[in-house]
Structure formats: C-alpha cells, structure tokens
Image (cartoon, rainbow, N blue to C red):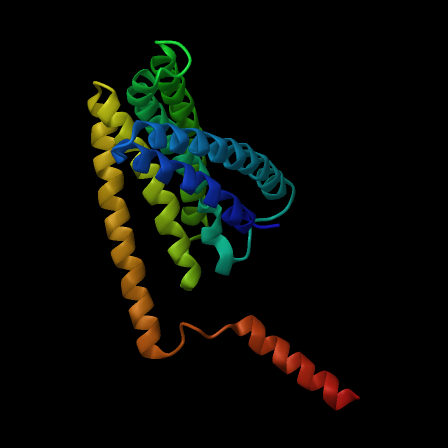
Length: 229
C-alpha cells in the first residue's frame, strides 16, 4: 500500500472545494444552493474516506519501513485531502452563510451555524495536516539523499492546498499568526515549484528523467530467464 491510494479519493474533495468557489459567484441563488448541497455531499464522500486511508497508511508506516527512496515524497500526499478538505469546508460555510438566508433554507440562523461548524472542522483538519507536515519533513531530513524523479511533483499540490487552507484561516481570523504563516507557506510553495521545474527540465535535457531502473532490471531478468530456457 502507498499514499497513492488517496489520489482517486481526493478528486471528490477538490470538486467540493471548487463547487464552493463556483457557488460564490453564481448569479442565481437557487443554482448556488444546489451547488452548495452537491459540494457538501462530495465533501462528505471524500474526506471521511481519505481519513480512513490515512489511518491505514499510518499503520503501514508504523509496522513496516518507509517507502523506497524513489517514492519517499509520497509521504506528503495525505496533506492533500487534509488541506483541501479544510479549505473546502470553510469556503462552503462562508457561501452557505450568504446563500441560505436568501433562499430561506431551513432556519434563519442555519447559514451562521454552517459557517461556524465549517471553520471548526477546517481548523481541526489543518491541525492534523500540520502534524503530518512535520512528520513528512522530518522523514525527508533524516533520509537526506534521495533521487529526483517525476514523483517530486507530488510535493506541490499537497503543500499548495495546505497553504490555501492556512491563508483562508488567516483571512477569517483576526490573527497575524495564520496570515504570516500562510505567507511563509506561499513563498515555500513557489520556491519548491521552481526547484522541481528546474530539476525536471535538467532531467529532460540530460535524457535520464524518464529512465526507470526498475523496468530495466525487469528486462534483464526476463532476458536471463529466456537464456535459461
């Protein structure tokens, strides 16, 4: 098992967060309400499933060794559903706060409740993500040298959505802590993207980026098997 199991699940979380952004700009409040409800459903599908997979993945890391060095950056993938889930539920609550009163959905204070509960869930997911970020960074530091490959691009999305969640909390709270931390994370994501882009173009120029040693070894093994036959 690898953290790649999260990739098909996180699509629901991304769709939910995107739905919240779309609902915020729809001119028709009834269409916005339908989009909000669909986004909540997608969020409810994606985030709980992602948390289940993260628990299984954590158990795998505890009882077995870390992934191979070529796949080591995959330990950052759980940040994806945590960060995007935290941002999505906060954004949905913010939009619900505006749309629910306009459409007379449930009671007059339902939008405020959804906003408050959404922020609470968002900060809890962010806290869990912060713990996982610490674990992932510590893993890379202790491992030190590990080869560059296309899997390094898996660093950009998880850190990017975690940064988005941090900046959202900074906008909602009268706290310089989250604003400053969001700025630091934003700069780190840009620098990381530039670093990965540089190594990608350099690997393409050298011609060794798309070489898979594991497949080469597999081909040699098949050749030896054929000779023995």
